[in-house]
Image (cartoon, rainbow, N blue to C red; front, side, top):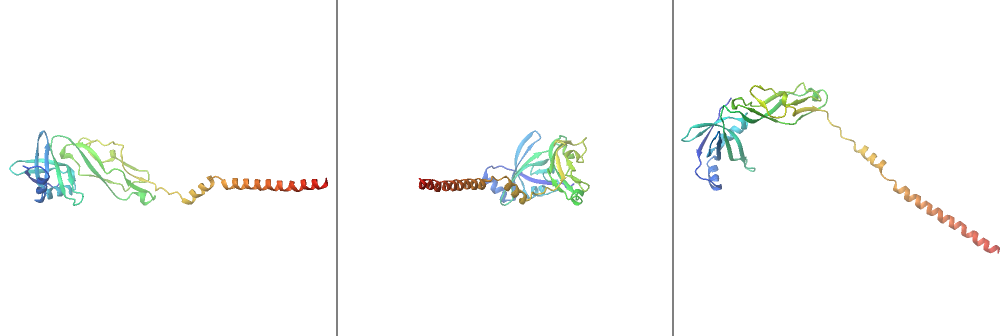
Length: 238
């Protein structure tokens, strides 16, 4: 495993202007805390921190913090802030690590291979959760979990309990039944023609009612018109 060292200096000044000047020198403001010791404000090498974040172990990397004029301490990246425009580091939190104390960490889950359910059955592979939470000693933190999914058919699920880890060293904090990935059947979209047909069948037949009413009116007028000549004829006979 690759080893990393982050160089730092004690920060004597605070505030936005001081932080800006620190970044201009290639350093980034930081705080080192934990392990029942006092917090220390530092300025650490930004490139060295960025290199750790890009490594295989990422934020779970355990590295040495070398402070000028002081002793080295083991630490991990607990939190960091990045400029959304320039993508440069603005601030980092460093957590001291005691190698004999268990700690909580999040470890990424990666899959490889093409599932048989996709290749043979026309299914779709979905990644639901990409990391799990564990509790273990710093020296037992896995870099990642890699799972071969080549034999997964439709309906097969990868759960947190299926991950390869030693329960004597690592405690799984994520729900063991949590689905991390699965192969599912591709859902078919309903045809819009069928929806239009249903809408036509269920629509109220208002035009027929109007037509019927009009027909009745016409019939009534016709009947009234037929009686009038009769009355006139009767009058002539008298």
